[in-house]
Image (cartoon, rainbow, N blue to C red; front, side):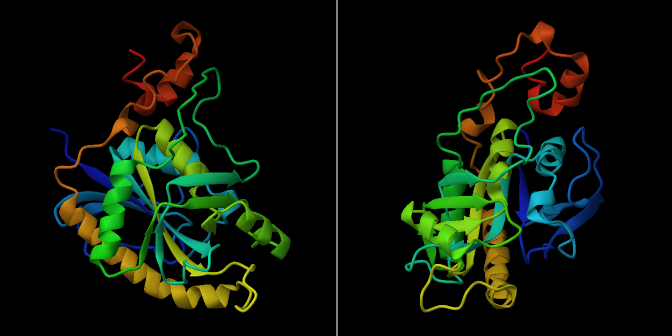
Length: 287
């Protein structure tokens, strides 16, 4: 049986994983360029972990400049089956307080100009994305949050904006009228690409502020976010450790077969170079 490997993409404030053993630093090249940073690969509670700081160490890369394709392709190349996307978010509801955790089950994409698919250069694929979050992994994240004492909301909609600027007040109020729960800048196209790569993906959204819609709270600022973020990061690290201890026996769900009927291009017309580049993703379907 193939050994499980869990990928962790650390968001704002989560730049390293403590407690890893047998640690290696792995630099990967991909057909899409370089990932945000070298991957840190090791074992946590005996489970293989591949950790990547989404913005690079020292938070060097803006949300709009992230090479999402290289990051997810690198995870696939390493053999990752599950990805936990840890993200700082703004709360769009009074009931979600800064310092609390949300495990979203839906996305609204308001990004512009980001490369959001592996399928170009002579190949077309249409994955199902109606339910964008892995239900098995999201349940594990939910349980982990509760076990470490965090206040956790199950389900909800994450609206992903382009950034790096925060929303205008008018935008924030518009998004609230759509019924969204949290707002962030990074989980799209990350989740789309993970599904294309047949990797189970779920978001651990850590609320840091009320964006700028709240009438009695200060407008969102980096200073205020950082104060909450440090507390959130400690909960996230504890939750990931719990996940490592308890993910045994869980099998990746239908996400692992997302491409089975998705590729519509005649295999004979797909350029050989494209087949070679995408082999880690499409190899089992293109003999």
